[in-house]
Structure formats: structure tokens, C-alpha cells
Length: 289
Length: 269
Ligand SMILES: Nc1ncnc2c1ncn2[C@@H]1O[C@H](COP(=O)(O)OP(=O)(O)OP(=O)(O)O)[C@@H](O)[C@H]1O
Ligand SMILES: [Mg+2]
Image 1 (spheres, chains in turn purple, yellow):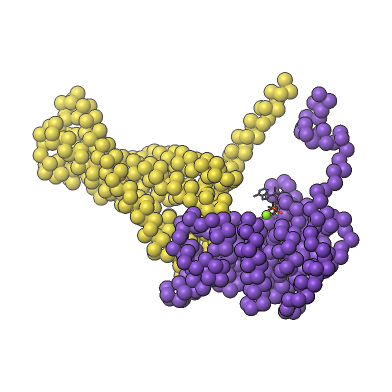
Image 2 (image 1 turned 180 degrees about the vertical axis):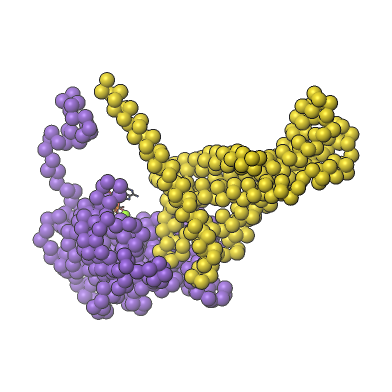
């Protein structure tokens, strides 16, 4: 990790607009399960207007799961969630659809529709939700492709793109309706540093020029520190801390530091337990073999 | 000993789970059909109309591309029925009456059945694979977040296309089966094609045609629903898609044959 002072200096040098006082997303005591396994264990957080919220945490800590819940894609076990002021358990189907239209998402894998060209992918939300004529839609799609530096690729199929290009095309599709809230799962993972940095700038632009609230899941520390207004750190399904970059850097928590400096978790398991786990807990009788 | 007990309990548990799974799947299928009807009727009002273009595309895929193979199979079946019918009736010296058997068998049973099985293998499996792949690639989630209802967008076009194309293919199969059988009858017994056609039209009522086409509509719904339910239930990666595809074909063909039997039973009461 670079030294904290230089990160903070660099951030000060950039203009940062005020985040709004209102939360676009509020989550309280969110508990979720996959089957029997509890994944999120009582998560509370919010995302403010015009804010970039970065979600960080170790692999398997539940970042993608949290993101899916923030988009109301998953059934929760308990807790409350409000998206753009609507309690998702209270609103009707039509309102729910209207809320959805104000969200945009770029999934970890891109999730482009493989049976459509890149251009058609990007035009789909326009085609489904607006009355624009074909030419206008094409122009808008081309504009968004230009934003992600994919001009001229609109007639290719997703299978003809590289991994990084798919991510950028997915980003273009996510922003085509100018959503109020944009979700990005690992937008820059697997991209070369130049493109990754350009994508970071793009995310900042979206906040500043379009006034979007953006939720980004990322592993990349440099990217997180560059774009984040606030950071949520998840650890095994629980929130370790929520704070500004400055607060995170100043944190005294050992787990936070371990995560930032990529120190693997200290192994505090006792040898017997370790052996048991290797052998499998179902057959403790064979552990002495 | 203890091991045996455990395995017996596990077996019963397994049966229980399968039964619950079956009921659940049937329930899901029912919900899917209800939802599809809803979107067909109220899609426009909800500003989410079912796209004609998508239906046409599915119709091409399910129907038009299947025409050659349907012609070939129903033609072959027609000839097979003629051979078998003549062979059997010759025992009673009544081979000239073969037309009755052929006409009823083709129109009421074989054309709908063969068409259903073929479409299940060709398009039901493709539907399961497409939906399953879209699910594991998070494309279904992407649709949801865009505010596009996946049932309306993916399922209804396939269902409508099936409902139009399976009976249409069955009708085509009727003609081809009867025609091919007629050629054989003509060659073997020397009955002219015109006389054969005249006989056939005489024997068959609209009821018989309706019986076959009605069944094929039910087959269409079964194929579509079984394909979608299996596709939507895919777990894991590409392997899961493969399993779901196979399962959807086996289930759809079984469902078609059982339904056919029930239909025949009820209709002949
Ligand atoms: N579809 C699923 N079925 C069952 N368990 C799942 C599923 N998806 C995720 N999990 C479990 O939920 C936990 C959190 O997964 P999640 O994908 O949210 O992690 P993550 O923080 O995004 O990790 P990564 O950084 O590797 O993407 C993991 O333990 C995982 O095993
Ligand atoms: Mg993830």
C-alpha cells in the first residue's frame, strides 16, 4: 500500500462535490442465507445521494451478495431495505419496476446478452422503456460506447470481445438510462492499469456530471482510494467499519490494517481442531489415524 | 446394521425430497403459465408489451427450421402404418379397408405425438439451455435490474411460438403422413390416390382433427414450461446447464406420452 499521506494529498487535489444529505439506499440489520448458511449477519449501511460507496473485504466475505441485495435481486431473511425512499417490502409491483428502472448494474462477469450484438445490448433498456426512434437509440448507444472507448464495436457479438471489453460494454449498458444509482461489481478486475484507471475516472465523472450515486465492489486498493467517498469494509458477513478514506486509513483496527496491507489472517486454530477439519468433522473417530 | 438403517431412512428421505421437488416443479410450472397469460393480456397496460419480433424469431427457430425433419419423420411413420395395416388386415382379407386405420392413427395419434417429441428434443432442450446459460451468466439478473420482466421477455415469446408452431407442424405432419401412406397404398394395393384421398376425407371428421390439434396445443405448453422450469432451476456452471437440458427432454417426452395416453383414454370413453 502507498503511504496514507500521499493518498490523502492526492484526494485533496481533486474537486469533490458535496454529497447530498439524503440516502438513496438504506439497509438495516440485513440477514441473509444461502440454504442453511448465513452469509450476511446483520448488515446496516446506507448510500447517500451523489456519493461513491466502495465495498471492500476479503474474498467470500459477502460483497457480491450484499450488492445483489442492494439491488433487491435476492430474498432476505430479515432486516429492512429502502431503495430511493421506497421500502421494498411495502411497495407494489409497478412501483418496484419503476424503482428498478432507476438502477443500473455492471456485473462481475459483464452479463451481456449473448444472443445480441454489443449495440443491441446497450440499446435494450432504451428500446424497452422509452419511445425513442431507432436512430436516436443508435446514436445514444454509440455515445455510451464512445464513453467507454469501444467506438466501432457495436456490431460485434459479446463472444467476440475480450474480458476487459465485455466489462466496459457492460458499464456502457448500465449507464445508458442515466440511472440514479449505479452498481459495479469489480469493474476493474482483470483490466490493464491504463484502462482500469480510465474506468475509475469514468466512475468519478458519472458522480460529478450526472449526479449518480455509485456502489462499487473492488479489491483494488488504489482504485478504492481514488474514487471512494466512503468505504464499507465487510469481514465474513459483518461490517468491520464504514468511513471515509481518511477514516479508514487512520483506523486502529488490526483487521482493517491486515486487509489493507493484504496480510493473511493469523491462524489461531489449535492443532486438534485443525486436524479435525482436515479429516472432516463428520468422522471425528478417524482423527487419530 | 446401523448402516442399513441409516441408508433406509435416507432412501425414504430421498423419495420424500423427490416428491416435494416434483410438486414444487409442477407448482412453478403453473405459476409460470399464469404469469405468461397475465403478461399477454396486460403487458401493454403495464408498458411491457410482448414483442411480436421476439415471437416471430422463436417461431422461425421452433417451426420453420423443423419442417424438413417433421416431413421426413411423419412421412416415414405414414408408410410404416400402411405397411403394418395392410399386413394385419390381410389376415382377414380386408386390406382395402386399411385407409380407416391409417387416417385415424395419423391424425389422432402419430402426427401429434411425433411432432411433440421432435419439438421437445429440438426446441424444448434449446429453451432449457438458453435460459440456464442466461441464469448462470447473470443475464436474467441483468434483465431484472433493468426492470424487464424475464417471464414477459423470454418465456412468453417461446410459449406463444410453441402454441402456434406445434399445432401447425402437426397439421403439416398430418398431410405428409397421410400422403406418404397413400403413396404406399397406391403402390401395394393399386388404389388410386384420388380414391384414397376421397376415402380419407370421408372417414375423418373435424372432431378427429381437433382431437389431434388440441393435444398438440397441450404438448406445446408442456414442452415450453418444462424447458423453462428446468433452465431456471440450473445450479452451478456449464455442467448444470447440460444436466438441465437432458432432464428437460426426458421430462417433456414422458409428459407428452402420459398426456397422450390420458387423452386417448378420455376421448374413447
Ligand atoms: N449462489 C450461491 N449459492 C450458495 N452460496 C453462495 C452463492 N453465492 C455466494 N455464496 C456464498 O456466499 C458467500 C459470499 O459470497 P460472495 O460472492 O458474496 O463473496 P465476495 O465477497 O463477492 O467474494 P469475491 O471477492 O471472491 O467475489 C461465500 O461464502 C459463498 O460461498
Ligand atoms: Mg464477488
